[in-house]
Length: 140
Image (cartoon, rainbow, N blue to C red; front, side, top):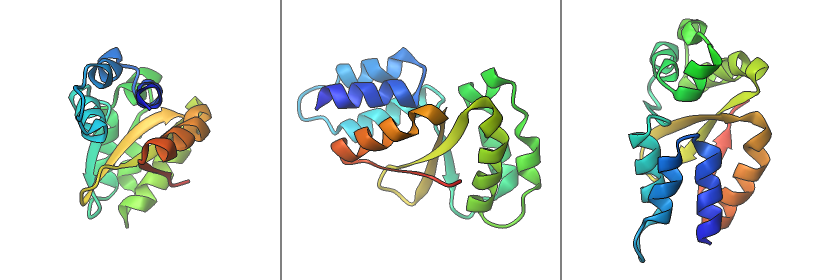
């Protein structure tokens, strides 16, 4: 089971410290919490509130390493009025040419934690998440 967590960590973030946190977790540790904390510490996680909209999402996306490295300017996501989900769908369309997607990771709170992942990895991420008991979702 730990191998599934390690592989999932490597797909969710390019930062080797995320996988190292999983590998270094003690027996009995809640690996979901370890993963979420490591993703957050590594800057790969954008914590949103469901009440947020385009401007907040654009600001959060600009800080994510994969968005920054791809040279994507998320400003047009900030023009999206309406719900956070509408803004996420627009962000997906903006990220698609770079083969990236926005992924929601249910961490068991009222927040909306989002990651940007390689589009090609979505099926494997979904399979691994199901095996370890995580809920993930794409919007587009």
